[in-house]
Image (cartoon, rainbow, N blue to C red; front, side, top):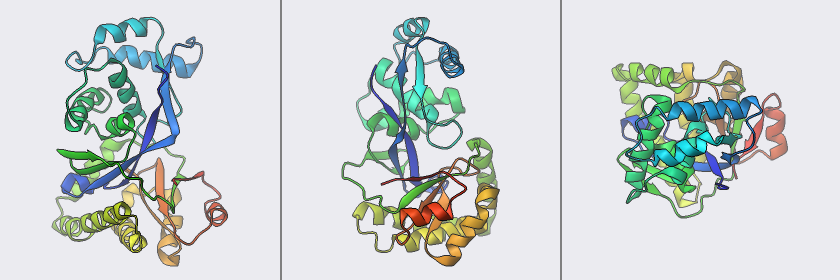
Length: 290
C-alpha cells in the first residue's frame, strides 16, 4: 500500500498512433499517487473516496478481487495523488495502475496487462487504450509499435533537452480526438499525416532510442511546424506566440504533449540553458524532463 504510482508523459505519437505510427511514453515521477487511509477530512480525500465508491459499479470482477477492494473502500481508502486532472499526465491511469497492482488478478504478459488495464480505465474514459495505466504500472518507458504490440523499454533514455510547459488550462481528450478524426476525412490532411507527421514521429523516436540525437531537433521542428499548420485547434491560445517564436528562431521547439488543447506542452532545446528557458517561458511553469 506504500507503493508510488507515477504520472506519464507521451513524448511522441499523439494522434499518429491512431494511424499506424509508433509512440513513446515515459513514467514521470515529479507527480505521483499512492493509497491512503488518512481521515476523509479534505475535499481531495472525499472526492477520491467517492470516485472509488462509484468505480465499484464498474463490471470489473474478471480483473479484480472486488471483495477486497470493497472492504478497503469501506475502511476509508482513497488515492492521494499530486497528478493534476485534465492535464494529460495520466491521473486516472495512475489510479487504475494502483487498483490493478493491489487488487488485480495478474495476467501472463505485458499485452494482457494492457488489455486488462484498458477495460478498467474504460470506467473513466468510456474507451481506453490502457497505455497510461501500463506506464504507471511498469514504471519504465513504453515503446508502442501499435495498440496490439507494446514493449517495455529496458535501456535508459537520454531525455536531455526535453521540458514541459504548463499551459495552466485543463482539457478533455475526447472532443480533440473527434476533431482529429474529422480532419482525417480530408484527403490532403490524411496524406500529410502519412507522408510527414507519422514519418517524422518514427524518425524522432528512433533518434531517442539510439541515444544519438544528432537529427532529433530537425525531426521535432518538422512535427512542430506540421502541428502549427494543421492542428491549430489543439494549440492553446496562450502558447501560440511562443510556439511560432520557436519555429522562427530555431533555438527551441514546442509540440503537443498528448491530445493538446491545454494541459502541458512538450518543449525541446539543445541550445538554451535552464535560465534562458525560464526567461522565455516566464509566464508559465516549466519542468525539465531529464
